Length: 159
Image 1 (cartoon, helix red, strand yellow):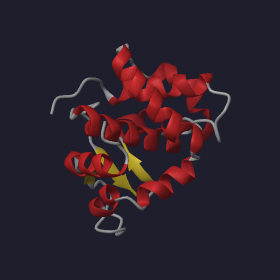
Image 2 (cartoon, one colour):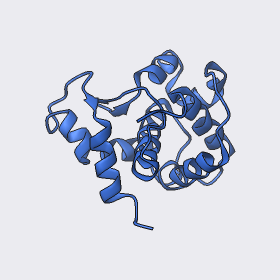
Image 3 (tube, rainbow, N blue to C red):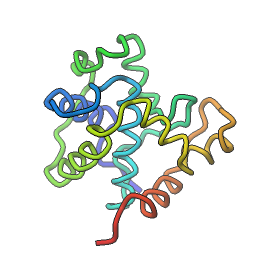
């Protein structure tokens, strides 16, 4: 499976999209950004059968994490992510992919808080299996195949 973008490209898109949104439960934070990257990645794997970005997603205590993006924002105050999108290099997202990102944001970005998304990932098989069912293992990667299978079964409706 090849990747279309870098995780930082998708993170920049998510932050910019969230900055435009007035009707959401909470503004984007580092924690929420990490979970949204996971859900975008999963939806792309399930629908297009390609990786949205090449970076691994890890199962941390606070849910799914893309370490490369987390490291960019780890010194930024938790609730100030939206003011620091300039830290990311970004390439344009093509219109088809942007439509799918928009649909994913509409479901997960608007309707869930960071804490709700963390709780959600903690109940899902990809995170549970990567952590040996909740036994926190720092650095355990969530396998793309696990994510793809789970999202196909539970999130993506057959066309």
